[in-house]
Image (tube, rainbow, N blue to C red):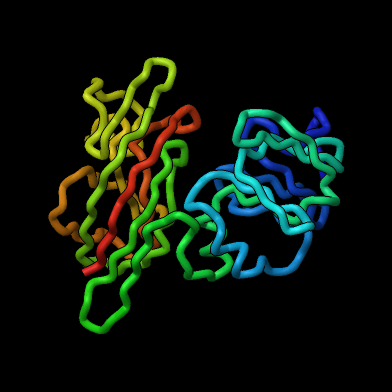
Length: 246
């Protein structure tokens, strides 16, 4: 693998995964779903056991653990923070893969089953609405719902839960957002900080909140859900959203 000036692969939020034709393969880490070391397709049982969000490391012996990916250093070491906040180092040769965005990874691998612990209930009967429960982490700008829509489709949302959008100040938000005065630079300036918002593909965001009336989709593509905050890395908590496509 290629490295930055500090012999690290993750610097300032960008992950360097090596070179292709002499060109560095560098990506924003929040756009990477999975880092694969072992090769081959992940087994369906592994994908089924992934949580809806958060990082997961899978070793070559089949064991796995949740936590947080920290970095790769020296070309042979992966730095990991376990669920208890303790940092650990693993030889990359012993690591099979690291999931940075389990939901996006399942989509990329075309796995349609439910994540571990999720209350996902997709119904595909003719003439009936398809409902799916999506966990929307507060510390992730956009969450892929796995639902494709057409322009003009009617979709309803039933949102619950709470996030903390500024841990230092103890600022919390419901799906309708925080009572704090709006800040500049928000993805959807018309809604309060921390509110539940959506977008189709890379189109302009729209507000959702806790209202339950069907919304008309403004474009065709993949439905994404997110939180109305310009800086999500210091957020915590998640919204639970039941999405029903009419």
